[in-house]
Length: 190
View 1: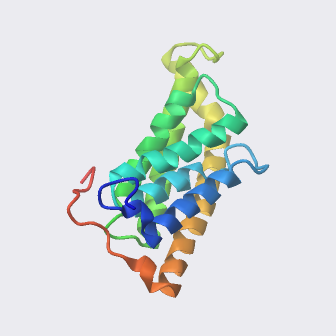
View 2 (view 1 turned 90 degrees about the vertical axis):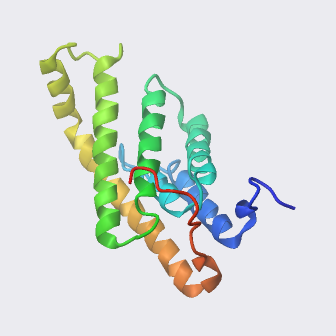
């Protein structure tokens, strides 16, 4: 009974655990939290770092985000949020071969920065923004978004510690989960 792809990767214990972690992290997004203090960035990095191929790493975390948005609501900036989310998945690809606290920390920071840059630009460029469509207006929009950047970074760091740390503990406790990553697929962004 091979499902999801020709390698049957979706039915492997490692993939099931990774998918479970992604789904739990996505569900946590529905819990009350400070604005932008959510597991979304960590979820994207984790999916990119741990799913064994891009056919799992891209759609599973993205679908969990979309399902969450069914409950939290869609808005005009969703395409930019999803694009930023996929960039964070790609950043997670850089963690596939070597995951360490400094590398995960750097990826978390990079993901939070790109989310800040992409979404604040989208706010400035959109019709929902009251910022003037000038260079000064763009700078003002970025300055106004700084408090939310800190929430994004704090949330990403907190949840990255939970999901990456949780998977590391699970791999140590259950050797079956330590399956090597597929070596035939080249890294994105090398």
